[in-house]
Image 1 (cartoon, one colour):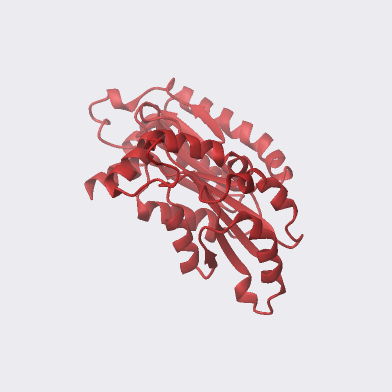
Image 2: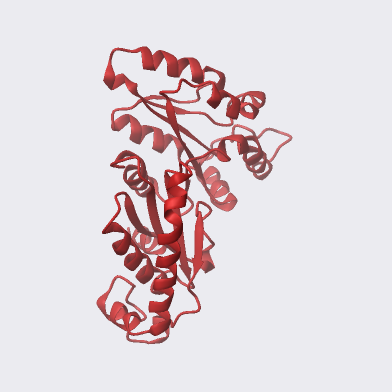
Length: 291
């Protein structure tokens, strides 16, 4: 049985995630009362229809607070054959506020006595029992609907095995560290192609920048150090029954050094592992702005 539990703060993209899973053949239920989860799983497992055993549910702040508080206990009541994958979506407070302002929809926890920002903060506390148990956290701050669907498809739907799914993500420190990062490496100490006028307008995907950084000894030393660290510790992450790992690599602008190292590390680990993805947050944002 495939059981996916979607959660996260309002405005983070839960409906998009549920719609994608429905398109991929999952039976989807939005706003499921958390206390019904164990019984729903038992009924689904008892179904003779194998296709019906792909189940996705959304459990969020619309639930009763006391039910959310007991979420870990509810997981323990699931049948042994129902091994859930918990996906938690979130975004920066400023992003959530902007999204609600644009759509003009009311927040489920806001009222005459609680402003939008207070409701967003309260929702984080309310969902902590779910966030703490999440297998996969996704920061949607810099994702539009189509980018989010692409990320979910690659990390969740197209996952080929039960092996550890690794995402190498480049980012710009000036735009903040990804809130879904498990490991973060700061590469701002490396030589910066930005200061060469002939390289400034390229990215770490382009040959002129790749050739420049290939010749920099500190860049190669950084690559070897991160590679060796991950080679040593990735087996321990797998042994701890972990299924997803996001490795964020950041530089000042997220265009050159971090992109170069994400590509180099992703290519190295892809040679011997399934489920390795590469994402460049700032390059995706630039493409979104152009469209």
